[in-house]
Structure formats: C-alpha cells, structure tokens
Image (tube, rainbow, N blue to C red; front, side, top):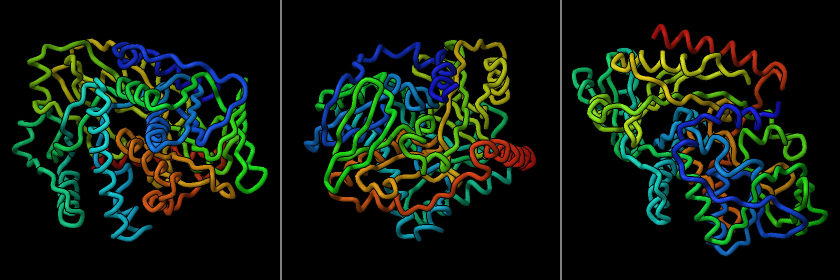
Length: 441
C-alpha cells in the first residue's frame, strides 16, 4: 500500500480531524496551465512558501496529492519548539560555530513567524505559550542543565532551569527529575493552523489544487525553459518548482527525485487523546499549560488541549506496521507519566509518518543538475515551526536571495544504509540500542 494511503488510514481517527472546522475544498487540476512557481505538497512547508511567494508577486500554483493538511502537518503533536531535531553539535561540526549560531537564531525566528502569521491572518488554532523539557533521571538532568548552560552562554538564549525540588510546581508526575522551561516556544492545533494558512495563501492569490498527485517531472528542454510537471489529468509548466511533499514524496521519488528518496526514512509516530478532564485536574497536571517533552532518544511528548484533554504521543515504529490496539498501548504510556489518569478514557488514537534524516538535521537544497527545482525535507519530527521558516527561506532563494537558504543547503546528508529493503531492519536494530540506553540511563 502506498505510504500516503497508510498515512490517511492511520490519521483517520485523530482528535484534530474531529475538532477542526472543515477546510475549504479545492478542485483537482484539469488540463494544462502555466505558473511562475509550482509547489508540490500542501503541508506547512509548501503552504508557507506559496504564501510568501504570492505576497512577493509570483504566480504560484500548489498541487496536493490528498487534501490540505492530510499529512504530518495536520496530525502531529502540535508542539512548536526552539532548535532542530538534531543536537547543535551536528550543525557546529558541519558549518562551524558562527553559522550554527545563525541556524539557531533562525529557529527562534521561526517561532516569531508562527505567531505573526496567526495574528496577521486571524487563524484560530488554540495557540498557547510555553514548553517544558524534562529529564527522567539524574544523569539526564545533569546533561539537560549543561545543555541549557551552553545554549545561554554560546547561543545567547536564556532558559529557566527547573531543579529537582521544584519539578512538582511545573508538572504533577512522579516520572521526572528536573527540567527547563522556554516561554517563547508553545503549542497549537496543527490542523486548524494548516487550514488557516491555506486560506491565507488562497487569499493572496495562490491557486490550490487537492487530489492532484504529481506523477512525473520533465526537466527544462533548454536554459530558461519551464519544468514540466505531469498529473493524472493535467500538466503544469513552471519556471521554478518546490518539492515539499516530505515523507509522502517517497512514493513518487522514482518519477520526481530519485536522489532524495534514500536520504529520508519514514517513521511511524502515534498519539492518543483522553476524554475531556475536569478543568481543575488538567490545570494541576501541567499548571503552566505548556507543551512537554522528555529528553529520551525515544521520547514522550504531551500537553493539555484547549478543551482540557491530555494529548499524549510517544510510540514510534520503524516499519509501516501500526501497533496493535493502539489506544490501549498509548493509554499505558499516559498512565506511566500520570497515574492520576488511570481511569481516564482514551477517546482518540491515531498515527502517521514523519521523515527523518540520518543525522536528524533538515535537508534543504536544489535537485542535482536542476537548479530551478528546490526541495524541503527531513524535518525529523521537529517541523511545526521550522516548516514556516523553511518556506520563507526558499521563497527568498527563488526571488533571488539564497544567502539564508544556502546555509541549510550546505548541510551534508548520507543515505540510509541497506537500500530500500534493508534500511528498515538496520534502523530497528539501532533504535533497540537507544531504547535500552534510555531505560538504563
């Protein structure tokens, strides 16, 4: 079964789909058309780029294989957090400290941009300030405190340290040792935000087409000629192209971008959402109402929603098989963090796939030999804010200023070992080691 179809099936019972107002419908592409820029992918990265490009005067057409927000953008954990999925050391090793600082500053800009777009376009998406990073053991707590010290002294970004004696003021859970708090990060309802961004893009003049998978890409016949994108019922001639399908692009990679397919890996992620809790209980569980994430390699992340539910993510799979009895498995993880929820019913349980890179750093660039075809992928589960900035950076590059985009494009990425058949077993073995290390440390 194509990955996109599996994604749709896993996400069918999401809390977000049940609670978001319906999105606007957009017709499938029929016939031939032209545009300045064609964007492939109707998630946050593609929509953000399309919006910025339209506001810069470009004629933009966006093609989405399913519906707007049907991928990871519309069913993720809803956490918008500073930094990248990889450690800063990965960026420092490849780019040097000065550019690593630039990258960090851009991740903070991404948070500001998210807030600006919510305000400017009046997107009702349940935004809430605050993020808690929590360590489960003393050794992990010391590592987290040392990381926060370095972020403040080297990167100039201050975080509130939470000592073991103070953890209870921040979270009513016996599981956590110590932590940090960042008021600038936060959380939201991702499907409401994605659909709101699509409305803003449409209002800016972007032509949006759903149920329009791209099945072929023909390079320009000559310098300055357009790139041809083929769909089931039409074709697009575009002067420039952005591929922003992320993990869903893997199904189409042989036809579109075979060089990209081996550099990302689909990973299943899973979330559950409880019944509506007593508001006072929800307030006691996380008094600041921040988003929360632990520091384990195989991590748990959770938050309370605007209607006082506990939304809890934490299981992952490195194959395309969903866990059996997902709601029960996620309820057990939720109870481990919050024994107070032992009797709480799970109303929603869902999942889907995100794209990860070998080093967990984002992978932005241009297709080899096709400088007019850009791509954004590899957000590695940390893309809610970064996708918005990535869209802005690629829009800047398409409009003639690639200075910021090229900082990210300089990051080097290796293919996953083992090819398409063996890379999943290899990753499963590697992740088993990290799970064991989380349990022992």
